Image (tube, rainbow, N blue to C red; front, side):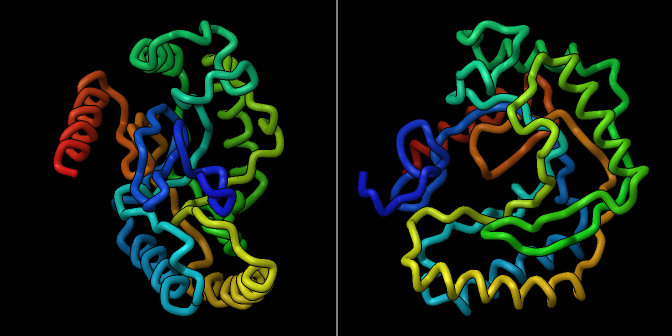
Length: 239
């Protein structure tokens, strides 16, 4: 693989070299944004602005509507079977479907955050950086993350410094130094405009979800995992 590609491209990564989504299954706890048309419209606008105003936009892939979410607590990815990024309660070789079921049972007693507000700070690379609207929200999310960590045995190295964000795409090809400077200035100016248009985001519901790639995050059931696997297989056959 060319050294010009970023670390999201290649075998056991999120993308193929042609920009298509690779199989990258896992589970996570997120706030899906699919039922918030205003927020969806703004994210699509962000993608369009980047696509039309950056001469190097071809070096990025933009996420589909179904994928838009804010992660509240990261769980596991099938290909990241390393001790710092796995559950201390599970063997590194545990099949993903078994991991899914274990987390579902472990998380069942927890009260998941609902109806809370996040404040939009800026755009950074291919993410919208958001922060808790107030100290009460910060504390609520912090406590839930600690509870989820104890229940699942998952505690990443950045547990205490994790930054909330909404991904709207991924950079797949390295930028030149000149492009990096242009990109930084563009996003500095763009961030001010975004905050004027989308100052806060109301998060309605938090779910334990599963995914087969970066295109869709579905509330967990055993059936949901099986359906995602079939969709991925059918997509591969059609290609």
